[in-house]
Length: 347
Image 1 (spheres, rainbow, N blue to C red):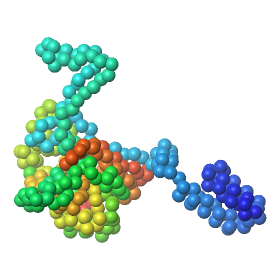
Image 2: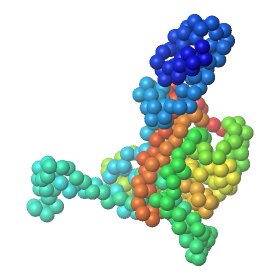
Image 3: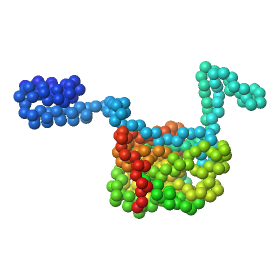
Image 4: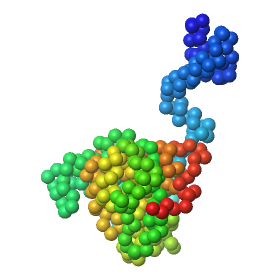
């Protein structure tokens, strides 16, 4: 009898018949209903543990139980993709399927080919991006004001394991902070005390979770330049250069230190920078000096639940890089209540 039971458990774990079918076959062996149910539960637990990630994720996504959510900005020439004082993003066609003449003759022509190829003029801080420690931390022996050199100044992005850029997502609603800020050229600030109050309501941040500042800033302001004029851009030009509009939400050094104390390695913001508009260095240094990293310029964070999704940041890999353009996305349960469905959080 035991040999037959073992065969049935193995077959059920391999999916050869349904739970009802398994219980019927086991019941025919004069096993009690309670014992049969326990065997079914054990077989299911063993089956789930033995499944490979490809099967679990593949089945859940293909079957519609899980959704993949894009959190990346679409990089485009006529959008605020770069710091306003930096060279802007450009696309240069190299070849196409037929010759495209230059504007004044042969110079500047796009030559014909059996493959269409473009090149980009781009820097590592473009649209959705990830900061690594050397972005603000000098190497050992080189100290600058407010940022002494350390070993983290040598830890470039290509040296950091990919697992450091992913983890369980925790969406922190800071929309009210953004909406309440009316001071031009200045950021709204997430303080340590504010985060502690948030933890009292939603629970402490756990090690390797990925906090996400959901303010809706890029959702609101990442738009084509008005009349194709980047000097009219609301997202970057006006708060940074003109100082005519309020800035985005940024974490104070004390808040960043709290994340480090909780064991957070990576965070995400839908602001174009982790640091404050008026002074970006302190907020960056507060985390990068501990080896933390973060994704900047994310979007659509409000489509995720407060907890339950899994975040993945995928940086473009370049040797000795200080930052990287990135594709950011998350996996969430279909139908999970999005953070944006609730009124902006007030603490």
